[in-house]
Image (cartoon, rainbow, N blue to C red; front, side, top):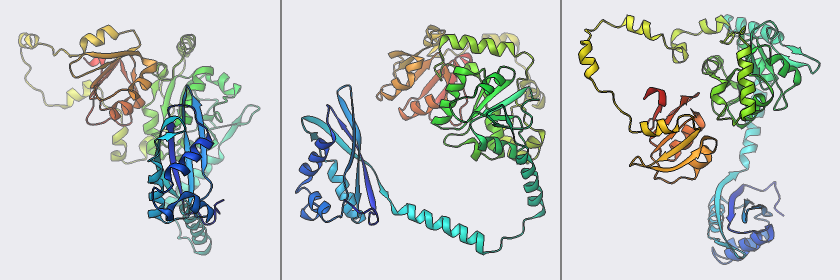
Length: 440
């Protein structure tokens, strides 16, 4: 077996087979089909005997008559030899009686973890053995202010749930994942947040949500999505806000927090995306209507909105009302009413699809000739998009345009995307035309 102290690289490969195979079949195929392929010096059996490669780790699962899994091969060879060895795996096209495919996903440099240890230790040495520069007066003030806010964190209920000091008194609260998220919001003066501690939402938080206007504010990853699904099943939430993709609430800076909260969406816009059942939808909407005394906006401290410079706030400030925009523009000579009425309204080439799909919660995949390739329920749209080829150029559906749908459609080369409503989009491709049916 390979000594982990001398391992330089680990070859990570993915295996797929049209049939049921097991670990011994894979190991036998690797040793048998690569023998003599790249010379005696890189023969796997000899390399393993000499300790230059370690034990092959193979994980295989079978489902519906097909198998898939991963292969890991530790190597103490150099970069070139390891790359050649990895490439040789991709020549294997049959395992046992089954047609198969092996592809190298990545080659990991295990020494990078040691480099990280060196960097971390160097930081500790630098902090401990060198005098730190004295902070500026403003930094001292900010540090004291943040310390006071963090000390204000309290707990709720018999489970000692972390929360800000204003949760009980505020009409609107923010539900976050954990204690670190509450602390980060306190750092920037947001004192009306409470943690759920994961997907197992405490009953005390469920009861509290019945009395407040609630915004679920979660991480921009799979875990954050699962927490929202759990909240939709057990609690009465009113708005959904997400951190930017790949970021946690605890990592966000002031500007990102305010931007994310301002881009929150009403809960009814997320019911399709999070696949909420019909009975639960009715309960959620009924609970939302009962909260007539709650505020519709979040309690974001004024100091947060005023402290950054105007140019820093410009990117997430709400647009001015249409009326005031017109007032600021120079007056232009209006055309006679008769001439304006003669101008034909531009008809969308997708108007027929939009009309037919209205109220159906269905989606249509359309080709260049505006012909329907297939029609699927909105709940299955993401999976359907992943399976399409390059023939689909447009997508029209009766649902909310979410970031997930935009990303998948962009990967598949879809040029036009039309939905019933526009959700919380962090980014949209320049090559894609996105509209809502109400705009057409």
